[in-house]
Length: 202
Image (cartoon, rainbow, N blue to C red):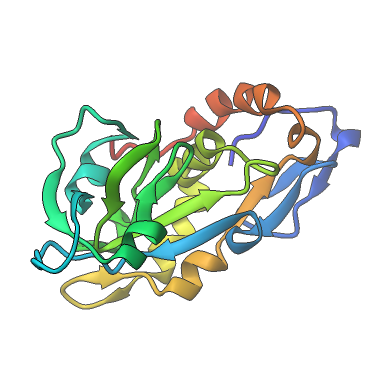
């Protein structure tokens, strides 16, 4: 992972081989400790007994780095519980959890606005960051880095189609810069550094 370089005296071993050195006041932590991870069970089928919703599907996430109201979402239905749990909110990050190739998994997209009536669809994981710790855009860029993505490539299992177990997503390692928790604008300044090391899938 390419992080902003500092003098050697201010760097430390992250304790994770693929991360390498990180600034001394940064840390490596599990995704489950900095976000709420929800694997969607909302399918494309419609039930007359359920409220109508718009569905953010796999292809919407795979083809769009940012999820906005400009996307032509498909119509479907969902239970009240599903609507409450999977309605998209600004700063949410959505990732694909299945793929035909293990190297093409955990593709992320950032929700750029509150999308009332739009829910996260099947084959996706909705990740709601704790914004006191990390903002959505910073999390998006980490998902896009080769070093972070490699965890999911290795964890993907299958034969003709590959998938990620929820536990693998929850326990994935991410880098968090503690001093930036109280200053989201400074955290955004790190985004470009992460973007420079992103994968080339988009």
